[in-house]
Length: 213
Image (cartoon, rainbow, N blue to C red; front, side, top):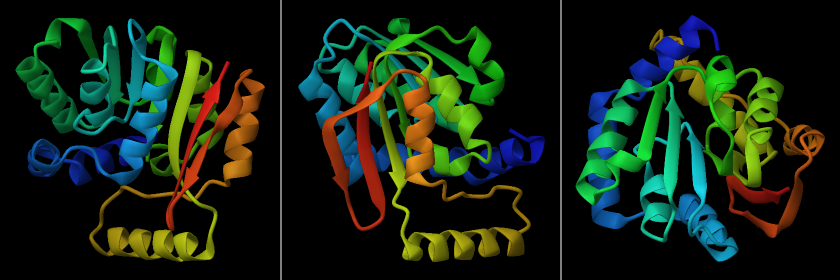
């Protein structure tokens, strides 16, 4: 990830944003598409498993799966504020000793990140310019299941992303968003030996899918 994009992530997903999102999660629980992904993973079974959560925000997936028997968590995020929020909530829930946190660009850090039974990227692929590098490196570390939430390939999403990026440019933020074709993403996942399970859900904006080795 270019330094500009890393700086943009830190700027956009800062301490104030992390604090607000953690408070909302504590009040309301997981949001819609995140809940769909969590429920699909729980249905497949997470007891005694390990999780690699990439770009996990305040750690909603981590917290929910640990409560269902997940054994260990590795979290990689380019936002230090999000990692701090994850640590805070993990300590509050009593599993801080079973979680490890890495700050930075996952693609650059991938060689030092161990494989995990479950790998998740919830609304993360659309925040990274080199889709093939991110998806290839993350999917290769999924020993069992690979779960993603990505934007649908629809004209309204393409328009929305252009508008978001226009506003970001006006604000002089180096952060950008991207609309990668789901078929291209799935091709990279297939190259890593994973195939989509029966689970696939789409909302107006998002696509939630789980792949298995």
